[in-house]
Length: 348
Image 1 (tube, helix red, strand yellow):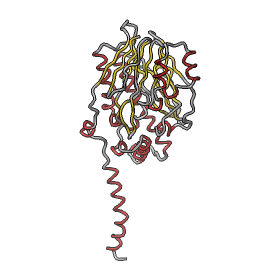
Image 2 (cartoon, helix red, strand yellow):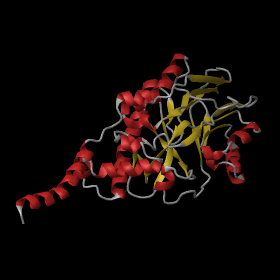
Image 3 (cartoon, one colour):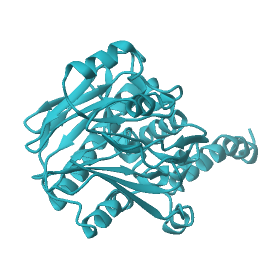
Image 4 (tube, one colour):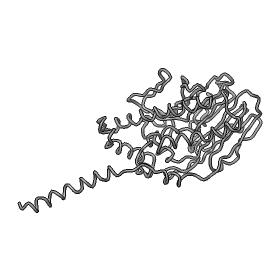
């Protein structure tokens, strides 16, 4: 064959290969300008209920969600810390403070350092699948010989749980407060020697507590009902197997109960709550909960109660931010969810 034609035919195969390599190498993370231009412009609101008797308080942080906050650790840390800075200025933080972040806050740590294409997916599951793909062909993926999705998922979980513990342990110690750090989905999570350990197995979404000295509390709240299309519903092999679980924590200053809002509503769950004889309850909320917990609490006689969830829009899905606080003789506040980040304080 003529050398010219032989080279021409070879180029038909090589050009797509080089184009593919060029595309892989040209991938970029979200730049500072792109990140800043997409930040929410809403201000921060503040509500407070009860009287300061110096016997502790619960501070719910309703954050305005945006996936791009997870693009870099310093951006995430700034987003999480800003409400704490404001709360400190208002003299709301001490060792008798329980700060509660929205559920699912740790589920999106897999986005850290990912290419911009990962954030452009139509759904959070789509973002996860893109993250798996790009991790497979990344330097770390090739070095660790990560080929299958299960292997890559466990690799992403390992880096996520390390960041989750480092960030929230630092925040709790820096501000000297207790922090219920939302929730995070991990494979077979267990608490061992003040750390969350993971291993291949069934994925579970759990909420954890960090104490004022930055240590991990030995206990957690498991979530068993997930919204359709969520990352948890995709990773969990037993979705929506409702177990009606609650979590009561005996702090030095008060005993407080926590539950998952979307699991509330059945007579069984109401009985479980009542039989604990705990008079202070916080629900980690969800858009699928449809206000059932708020309606029930409005008619109850609990000393203190509240609900926390994200506000905003992500992957085309609206997050209504149905958060509120209520004292025994008061009404749920705020009456309407409103926009932006809200600090909700309840004195005990």
